[in-house]
Figure 1 (tube, rainbow, N blue to C red):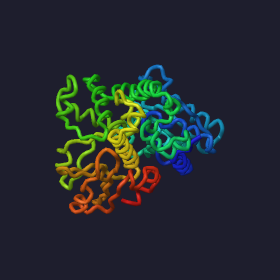
Figure 2: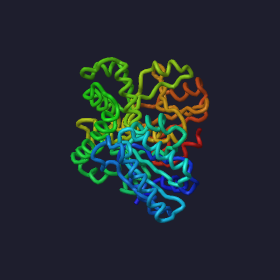
Figure 3: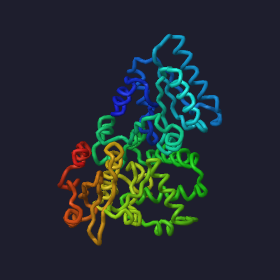
Length: 396
């Protein structure tokens, strides 16, 4: 059983005096429920665990209040000094944040020491409620996709298998049969992520367009693709503003992000052609029709795309914890695959693979922007295994 880093962090927070609601948020199938079950076996606090997914009607306004009252009753009956209430899939309840705010503030007013942990499938589902209703009352504990080290420990994967099949632990059992793996990915991860995490939480006037955009963006991970070109490849695409808004939703859902070009001029960043990047390489693979592991691995150009995208996934996963912005840089024929920016300083990372020969991009970038560090990853430079296991924060 893999113990993720968030396990230790949550245990430490629950040992502190009651101050804030703990919110565990992240994309689908990264182990949020598994992690909280592990934590509940380790804590010495009496608790109740509920899953809002079992609620018949999402408009059941009394459900949260009833669960909270159960926790208060058990706390009083047992004469406990503190109690823990955990609610999974909290976003399934309409206006959940207003109801949570009411119950939390009631406990605060009456000095009732009930600590609370809420879990949700993505930051998109929790974002509005947290920022509008629960401001100042919560701490966010994000859970990202599984790392290479975790997939290696749990399933014995080597680096090439991780680069191709990505970091969804639930799909690992099917990786030996690519057809079955693709069906599982599409039915258990891709479809719910779009249908439930995006379409059911935001008013989308063109759901078919959202599906098309997601598929196109994943297939082009690691590539520059302008909004105008996207409009030309999508049916009933509408206008550029619509696509930009849909891309923002996919970013909040930890599925796909349009990286911007690094520049000291803020306006140039937002006018630049986006470089599409998935959050998990499994999405690139499953949306690349006709692709197989053997075909990708034995073709240097193709494998270079997968390697570069895998590095991008790793950098995206670390961005929240290390509080940096991720960009690319390109000028004429010179480019740098990834640029990390924080506090007025930057770090340049170039991925060396069979996709293309090394260019003078790093040298030109160093002369122009004077990064704190520049690093070459892959090929005969730093091995991917070593890069994925390193301390990225030491470069910032």
